[in-house]
Image (tube, rainbow, N blue to C red; front, top):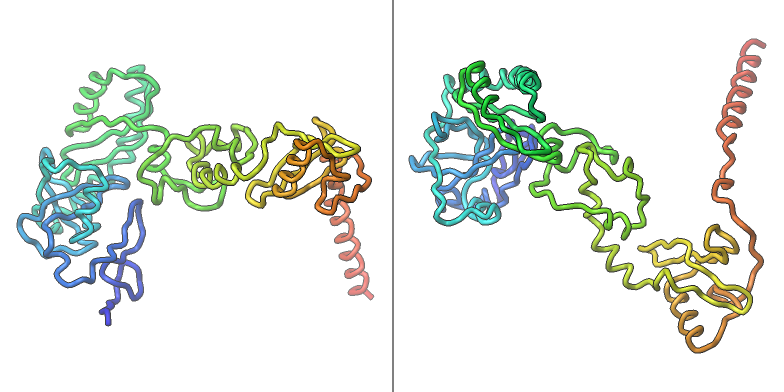
Length: 369
């Protein structure tokens, strides 16, 4: 039977590989409970400020476990990070990260001491103020760029400035000013709009935390064709996320829609019955139902049929035959023009309010009596 322990990180019973998901790219080490897992390899995965991770060599054979705060080699000085993975899975993660076998990895120095933690906390406390001030410096220099985030190294000797720019920026003068102002070594890293949204975080229109701020590690290109395949409205305000780019979630189900569309007839094919010619109006792709209309512009004499029935009618038309009606039974029925804007009464909410007012008045009069 597996041994479980009460962990302060998640406040309950959990295995060794479990920890509270407090930042992006948190992983569950499902091999952590295997015997001698940490002795299989001396490689460890270290998590820094989200979403930055790195892989280091435990050359001193320290007894490291997930959640330990360690001091690691940096250039120059040292950095402070949290162990996020040890053992067998680290090799798989390195392979996933496409690191070359000849890549020289840096070392883990030691478990962080209290002096290291105090210096680390002091450096982190300066990040927001540094970001605001650096934005003003870039503006005064007339640079067309936005500094989205600042990350200090654990020993406070280096700062990474993450910026966004549409065009190439000459920030040599900016680096001189920043180094003179903050007395640290400066490193500039350009990121995209999606990466910035992932670093800042937020709540999406679905009501959940942004995917780029929780679990996404790669940002695949998103095109409007994904919206067309899923019959989504091509409204930029609806399709754009908080990064002002097309939503990444548009790619999640597009493959299923592409496969489902292959089982539907072409929208350009019209269906002929004895009395009318029917044109494609809309389709429910996943349920494989299609709505046809006798008018190309509006919904007139609507008929909703299955894809199987549509193919039957198409084959009949090719053979020179015309069914009596489109529906499955082939029985014609009278139709009428449908106004899509007239389906709901816009005063229905006012009627509900009037009923509530009447009920309240009746309740008050009964209480007074």
